[in-house]
Length: 114
Image 1: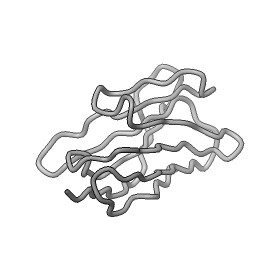
Image 2 (image 1 turned 180 degrees about the vertical axis):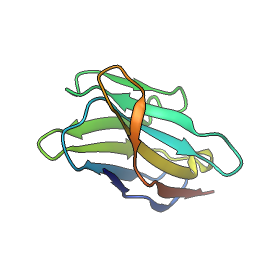
Image 3 (image 1 turned 60 degrees about the vertical axis):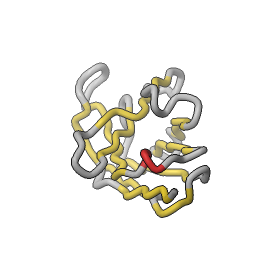
Image 4 (image 1 turned 90 degrees about the vertical axis):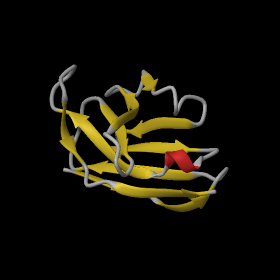
């Protein structure tokens, strides 16, 4: 199970930190987001060791994904937030190494006001 938290309301230019706590060890994990009327889109991913990360163009340079395997938790630090970042953010975990994202958290709302 994945439990996402940390969303909220912030002004443009502000920061938020999201957390995703897993009930056990996980493989690669990622954050996705879905804005109203839009499809879910990839934001950032991190390997099981944390040694490699990947970002969507919209997140690169502003967001940082990290993980603490001792706590089975993945984080998404979001800086310089923009109104276009408003969405429900979901964390996801691969079921097997290199496989699809099989496990999903419940989502946490991020709202950025202009």
